Image (cartoon, rainbow, N blue to C red):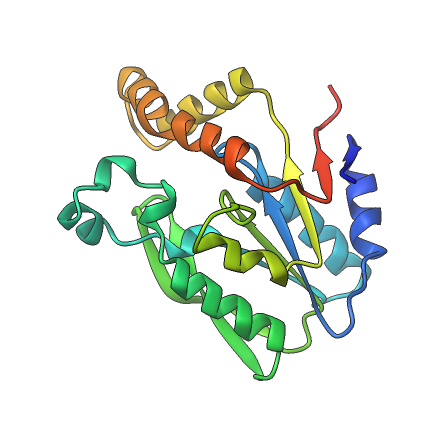
Length: 213
């Protein structure tokens, strides 16, 4: 049964009471603009304050296909849709992280200012106990994304009202140098359709987090 919580401290409590030996993978899931990265960073800071080096973050966005690939496939305008990610690579990384047999594992990160992924941009040591995997489609209940589901010891969904999502996403595009009109177009034609797809097609999470007003 899904539990609903409204305070970050309760989210932290849920994490610290979930089995972590030798390692746990936690999915932080939500639509674009829901605050996954911000919440993941906050949990990362708190967990590492309690035990240094115990937590790391793996963003799904590091597995974006390059713009050249998407352009060749006619999918550049829908960048961020489920088929614009290297899901096989993400699944392979989950297997390595869960097995925890290597001294360290390098993971890619997405550079939003350059709109590309950087390979080996973060290294996760074998001693890390909690890995927060954050992304839109981690609980997607369709192939091949559904191969990720068994890896998670805990799944957390971030819940944000669509009007608030729309406002955040338009502001994000403005910060990255796009006009108000272009930002609104990108949100309407790409970001919001992706957000609605996440909500409609993801399996229920263990926890739903909606920040208190």
